Image (cartoon, rainbow, N blue to C red; front, side, top):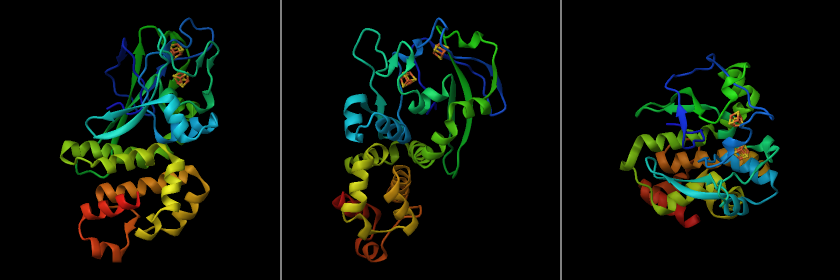
Length: 279
Ligand code: SF4
Ligand code: SF4
């Protein structure tokens, strides 16, 4: 699975597994004949941290950003709703942020734009608590960057592109997504659970309102430090949300439904129902 990768018709995935110390030749810079050609007609799945960075850069609320710049899609194997970057409705179907000089939001560009032309594959086997990953190259016919002399290891590329921070912030979220995929269609989510997943993934203002202004804190036992940090930062709020998703989807993690509520409610679907009421 290429979870963090942008694709376009005419792109080739090199059938070679790369690891952190694997090398490749590549350079992307102004002056190349293909400059910005890769920023059209692409599917970019947005991660939660992508949306936090982009909407703050553009000084928009999450809801405004989602409405203006994204379109919803369903990850079929996972049964999860996600946001993808909406291309312009013009002949070239360009990314709304591409300009002749490059990316308008370069320092806040999404994770998949940072990875490119490296793709990340995550393999998660059922019954395992962690996942394996490797990398591969995405070679597009028009991209002349591969003809450049500069050599990188994958680790150097990751560092140069600031990928580590994005992966660290998105780690819990990605684990949930991969785990849901391994459950396949056997574990179908209710409409309400899908809504909760989307809110936690992409709408920090709505999540903040839900955590601090609904019955949520009276229903769940949540480590105090998680609550305190979530008040201060959207990144920590996202981590709290992901811990909660682990509780509702898999019945595990550091957030637990309060003992007295659990005794009254009994099974997991009733707990979900209780949560849905707060939602
Ligand atoms: S096509 Fe390749 S070299 Fe050209 S701008 Fe895009 S990534 Fe850079
Ligand atoms: S966000 Fe920036 S780097 Fe990514 S496709 Fe759009 S213009 Fe290109």
